[in-house]
Image (cartoon, rainbow, N blue to C red):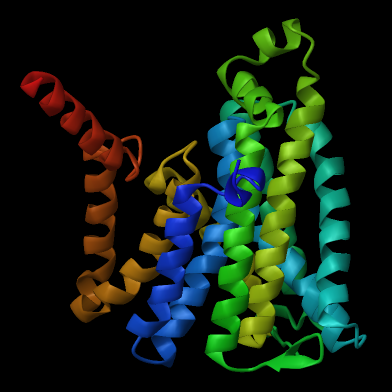
Length: 321
């Protein structure tokens, strides 16, 4: 057994890491770097959301709000109370983790569109609070966020941020890849397929649903906090209903229950609107048509295209054999 097998690093993660190493040499300006960083932060949130939706079968329409609230906590602790940025993020993670675990108990007893409405309601409440608490959050105007200092080194260049976020994204993929392949991942899939059957074989369904919900919120909190420090500004828009819907669409578009589908979906929906700005007033129309076309021809997400390619090759090989 070699070193990579001992630490469970797959070929997919190595390929993805190689792609992230090459990307900076392709990016042409500051805006491209910012877009790449934003795509990676969205991908982190979507990886956690995909664990909840794709593997555990639980719907959430409030993850944009959770990411926004986590970002505000980190920003306020650093800017107003002079906390170290890492300590601010850690504090936000602890608070949001406890918050998520507590609210998961009642809302995860609901199913289907009732669960979606419950998470939507919590997200709307969070957004309203961030808008009206002007003295704390800056209200609709938002608030400036102090620079991020990592071990005495201030991250001020986009390349610095790219490296940090890329490393964190790869680490997140590695953690979730191992988590999905572990007994915990098999339990989540059994809950997704049938909660009654999972309960009958002795699985504590309520506990595992709360745990996976908490994990997804914690990942969203980390990404939301980093976004605030990266942009130097945060507003209630980051916790809006629209942002939550965008995250869900990213997961579904990439492929539910597919780890790298979340990354692909997040990347496409982060970059695509920027590519369509040249069409001016037709931007939204074209964007919508592209999403509809993908969901019609690839209902299982963009990642399913790779499955079809492999299936075609297998059939071709079987005929020639």
